[in-house]
Image (cartoon, rainbow, N blue to C red; front, side):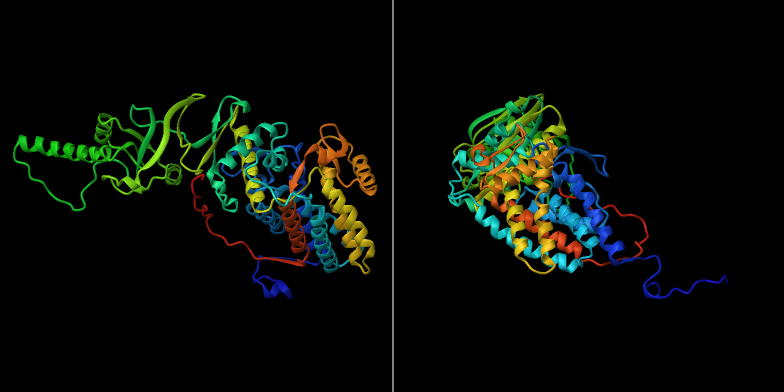
Length: 544
């Protein structure tokens, strides 16, 4: 037996193979560093001129996007402190659906400033208390910066919707926001229920079809299914629809039985009875007035033959989520097995037709009168990654619409709000006594990240722009922000660049919370990772 060192201290207490990091340089500064790395990734994608990131995830799927939520979802972030920022970004995505980038970048900026304070000798708890005062003050100032008269809005008025939605869409697809926000506003207004607070994001669908260009995009009231019909009938107008979840086919009997057949006639009769049975079922459906049969599973050969004979159109929707949506669009009730449907269970469509768009056959289900149930934005673009990005822009637009249904207050975009917050907070920090004031001053400085990043991403001189913004705001022009196209400072209320108040509110709140959480950590204790074969995580649901 060789001479072995007896472990002592913490080593003796914990199982071997664990890591233990404590103290300022090891734990706190390392955490801050990891978060800084993450926010450097997302920061260059902030704003309309943001750069795209190319992310290849563990399944070899390629993402080319500047949507921070997608980027951090696909990066497998290992570091526990950086994960906190990712969670803050995800929380923002769940809550509002836009502004995840601001959350992550701002939290990273707060932590970077905290690092400078720690190196100056401040204790993390003082920084935290300063940051908490800072965020509370920020929220009060934000309330004052809300545009007057924006509390009430008509969510069915297209101009008002577009003015609020444009900034969110522009940050994803700069230069095309006018075309896109027009489409999205149309789609959202069509499916908006009587009480706008109940707006369901899932009711605006996106169909991505390769080919064509942005100007070919349209909005369809109803659904667009990416499949052909099963039979030969390709068009139906003003038809009733029967939906069968279990498939249209001869069903196997409940019990097992043996049939003894003695002669050829019996065999023929046996086959005939089966045919007669199927025909009877299909005829029953046809007699109930239904012209279209939608099946959730396979459609049998024989059943299809009789459907053709009775001039029924047959659609097959294999995804059960799509089937539910189809039922919502048409107002049908999905029946379990093939039988004569009640008149109440039938749905109604204005037209079902199969059209060929860019070489892909799609079935378009239109339902104009039948309530505002489902609406589809058909996106066209040259490559898959462009389409994915367009879809994200649409998602952001729809989520913004949902947010504005709940709270329609708006504040100025294009960094006008941030500079004003920075200026007001700076003044507030001079009034504070105690060590908090340094932290509050740094909190105020962190807001400069937004104009700085916007300017840098647009290739402008950041220092020049920030100082001229400060000068304008100090002389009382609180509405001045950056005009990225011309690279000058302008009054944003004339340029019509607005952000939703709720988006900013939650983004800043989550960012400050995440930063404080990371700063509160003073020791990291990692156990030795469990051995054993790596299990694959369970497969997720389908895309919907």
